[in-house]
Amino acid sequence: MSRTTAPPAADGRNGTAPGPAPEARRRSNTELGLLVLGVLVVLCAYALVGLSQNPVLPAGLAPYGGALIALAVAAHLVTRKLAPGADPLLLPVAFLLNGLGLVMVRRIDFAYAVRDDPPAALAPLQTVWTVIGIAAFCLTLVLLRDHRVLDRYRYLIGLAALALLLTPLLPGLGREIRGARIWLRLGGFSIQPGEFAKLGIVAFFASYLSDKRALLSVATNRLGPFHVPPARAFAPVAAAWLVSLAVLVFQKDLGLSLLFFGIFVVMLYIATSRPAYVVAGTLLFSSGAYLAWTAFAHVQARVAIWLDPFADAEDAGFQLVQSLFALGTGRIVGVGWGQGRPDFIPDVHTDFIFSAFGEELGLLGTTALLLCYFLLVGRGFGIAARARDDFGMLLAAGLTVVFALQVFVIVGGVTRLIPLTGLTLPFMSYGGSSLLANYILVALLLRVSADPGDAGRPAGQGATA
Image 1: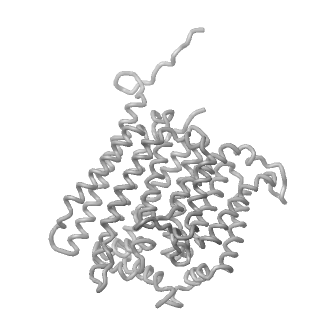
Image 2: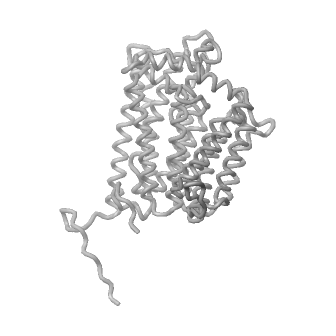
Image 3: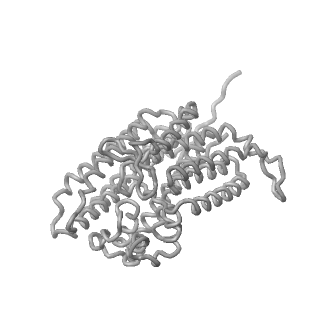
């Protein structure tokens, strides 16, 4: 039998359709242009912070700018070489948020410096973590050439993630801070293994759900007016609930427990489109939250502060009250870079860095930051929608859900929308564990988006059967 070839579509020049290589180059060039724009924005912010302290350009502007350019170029070249055709917006937006976070940490250093007992400078160490984060980003793309490899090691990844969750419980290594035992002390550094465990948990859930998707989607029973899956299908939900409760009971970390259980329930709904799982998950989470409120004093304290922070504004509610004052002081346009008092907020460089931005950049500035996060989340779900395999779709969706939940929880906490949970704002808060984990997360999303079967398809067009 002879094989026929369909006539190529004209592109307006030589009558041939643009292939994967031109499309990949176009995306890479877009990424490079956006990276250049992001570096310029960060350098302008750095200059403004320096000018707020002295009426001359800061002496470190040139070396700081050179370091940022070198990091951006390195990340771009690795992406261009190893993930051609990948989404062109993820890396520039992540780099922009990271750079602005570095600038704010530097601004907080200036604010701390006027104290009688200023702490050690935070910006130099955060810059080192940024270099390590970019290195982790590049290493992920170098080692993982196909996201489907993760599907082959489902249980190994799941066990490793569980081990990371449990390591803070080890005597001599784990550290308890503010009632939560989520830190691991290694040498002179403290890390949060849960930041990396969540990536492994997403990969495990994606592999499990892609394999059991058909079973979990079948509705054979009735529960009142609803058709629901068989009872055994709810076993994974119950197991995830028990593990999240174990995290809550033994590590006393409400934020990580909420994140863990929320990831699974949302991924389960994405995989099956069954609202019954969301209802069951909501009921289980509500019961678990009530148990946590009755069992743990620090959870009761956080709920009480959330309900009325001004009842104890000089002690327990002081941090949240100062956060609300900072956001109120910023109003619409903010007081300007370097003109606020972020040092009035305890731990402003970690949990409350969003409030520092709110004071100095106002509602307009924080809205711009949130739009950057929305853009990352939207692109992540777009990658999931265009994925050519179930595992890739669920992996990209799960990673995006992790990112979105973390942003919602921390921004909701500092604005008093929900109780504080102690998570960090991705790419912006001070801390190495979160920065490394989020750069690896972006690399994984880029790897899924650079699926060889997807590289030549213009953005916005779904895969065809």
